[in-house]
Image 1 (cartoon, helix red, strand yellow):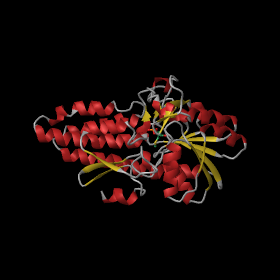
Image 2 (cartoon, protein in one colour):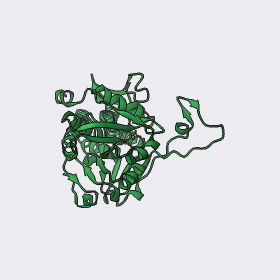
Image 3 (tube, protein in one colour):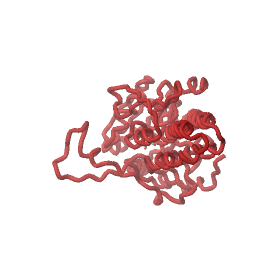
Image 4 (cartoon, rainbow, N blue to C red):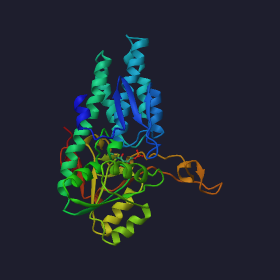
Length: 344
Ligand code: MRU
C-alpha cells in the first residue's frame, strides 16, 4: 500500500483506505470535492453506471474492489458458500458499462483468485491491479513523451488522466511526462460534450499540477488544426480490437479524420488491459448509449425544446488506419501490429 501512495499522482479517483472503498465523486467536479464511501457491490455497480467514477482503467479497478466488498459480505453470511454467492454481484458489476473492456478484464482477474478460500487475497489482487495500472501509466508516459518533438502543441479529448485510471493517466500521463521534460508548449483540451469531461475534469486535473490548459468547443478543433496550431493529438481508449481499431469517447473519430486531413499525428495511449484480442474489429464493440438528458439538459435545466429527441452514443470507433501509434506499457506499436502483439 505504501508504494501505491508514493507513486500515485496526488489525485486519487478510487482508493481503498481503512478497509473501505472511497470514490471521488466526478459528477461534482470541479466545483465540489466530495468522496463517497461505498459499502456493497450493488452500490459500486450503480456508481460506475452513474459516472461517479469513469474512465476505462478506473472502472476496472473500482469493480475489482466491488468484488472485495461482495466477498466480505458473502463470507460473513455463509463462509462455506461465499464463492458461489458472489457470482450474482460479479455479473451486476460486469453489466455496469459495456464499452470499456477493462471492466470485464479486471473481473476475470478477480475470478482467478476466488478459488482460493481467502477474502484477503481478493483485496491484495484489487490493489495489485491498481498498482500495476499506475506503473503502466508511468511507463506509457515515458514512451509516449519520447515520441514528441520539442515545443510540442498537443490536443486531448475527454479525460484520460489520473481521474480515469489508478493514478497519473494514459493520454494525460504522456502529457504530464512530456511537460515535465520541457517538451510541451501548449495543451489544448476539447470540452467533450455532452458530459464535459474535458472542461470539468481534464482542465481541473492539469491545473492541479500547474500545467496550463486551453479549452475549446469540440467543433473548434478543425479550425485549430487548419491554423497549424497542433502537432499531436493524444487520446486514451476504452477498447482496442485485434485489428487495431480504437473505441474511445465520442468525438475521437472526428479528431482522427481531421488529423489525417491536416497532417497531424494521432497517438492512442492505453494499457494492455484495454486490448481485446477476442474481437477482430471495432464493428463488434458494443457502444454504450447514454440517457437523452445528457444532451437535452445542462445541470438539470432543459436546454432543448420539449419534444426534441436526442441520440447520445458515448463512444465511437476510430479505424486503425487513422491511428499513427498505440502506446502501451510494453511497447509503442503501429495499430496494424496489434494482431501479432501478445500480452505478457
Ligand atoms: O465515459 P467516460 O468518461 O468513462 O469515457 C472515458 C474515455 O473515453 C477515456 O478516454 C477512456 O476511458 C480512457 S481513460 C484512461
